[in-house]
Image 1: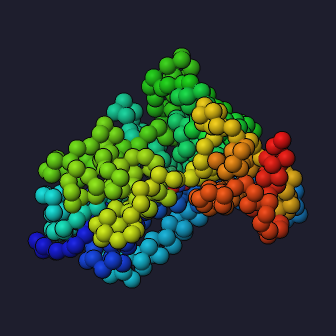
Image 2: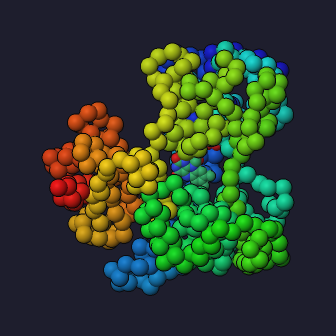
Image 3: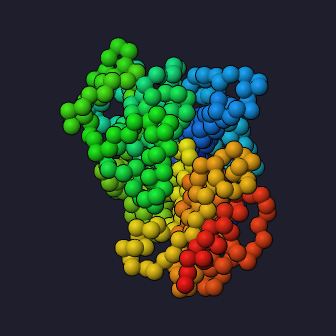
Length: 464
Ligand SMILES: Cc1cc2nc3c(=O)[nH]c(=O)nc-3n(C[C@H](O)[C@H](O)[C@H](O)COP(=O)(O)OP(=O)(O)OC[C@H]3O[C@@H](n4cnc5c(N)ncnc54)[C@H](O)[C@@H]3O)c2cc1C
């Protein structure tokens, strides 16, 4: 059994682990990364963000081919199977692994593939797939072990027709009818993907509104477009039990309804990957969701142990996880790369795409802030017309006296890109954060960014 000494050991090679490892290595620390998978990238690359976004992209292309009359000259609408579109996701995953493996090599970071656990606050034992145990000793350790789908004990996830967001990537057929239980971001994204493939989706929501943290108008738009694409949304429902059949499932709801489908995709909650870490050996506690508590410096209750990414809970996004990991390492190396990550935009890759930053109308109304609204509808914009992407809107909320931009809410083509223009302006101080920026600045034409100019004029015209 070999013992290796490091300045920093990072557990997990998802975005949080990568952000931490790169920052520590660039500051001259000797770094090792441990991951229980045999490839880097974390669940983000292998099971979550990357495969779902690649699937969505392929489905959007299929939808464009099947609905744009121009393509009828080269063929009739075609049906694609889920395994077919999965292949393009696999290609992206492989490319991501190659690029990311290169980053570790370039930064002289040692990689250990095996499951790591604490034997004391400076020692990690790594059990490798071949049974060999390696011992890593480090002054500082970053826990970035991510999360996995929450699996209630009363649901048989071994049933061949019951999937979660990890196992759905092994689906080898295309169901005609699919139940998606849980209408959070992941449930809504998969509802878009499967309905785009022509699958009849029942989307079961525990609440009375989809993604209620969004601006109401955008949440309504999402519901409309999902329904328009054959998704049956059932609000305020809870499961009683899930009955597995030979070729399908029956979902029994507490309301007495029974829904039958070829398969069920469970998208209700996630659990932090802490159960194999041996945290009990070093006195770090986790909450009921398996998450570790940290302070604003990403430090756990042990002063040399940090945690970042999904394992600490909110916002559980790859975008934030990378910055949290980088910040955790910023604290370790004591340079200026630390910040508490709380200004996270929302990017939701449903069809249509949704993105927002800042306050929404409900929040501003509750806070009695005198705001005004400016809107641009994509159906009138040249770039959206050229791209055959008429669905969507950009909405800017701004203070009617100071003209400060308070929120940007967008759905439709390129929404998750467009929002960053608003984000950049909102992060400016004083008069620089004014809606006037969008009317006093020349934008490329035709672009989707032009929506800011249109929305700003619309909003400023409402002032008196
Ligand atoms: C379907 C889906 C879609 C998503 N879409 C988006 C999106 O569009 N945008 C976005 O920003 N976020 C998205 N997310 C969320 C995003 O994937 C996560 O927030 C992100 O992966 C968290 O990164 P992380 O570094 O904390 O951990 P992870 O990516 O979960 O990686 C953790 C790694 O640690 C390893 N590990 C676990 N335990 C141990 C151990 N004991 N020893 C060694 N290694 C261990 C795991 O095997 C894994 O490789 C999505 C998630 C899902 C499920």
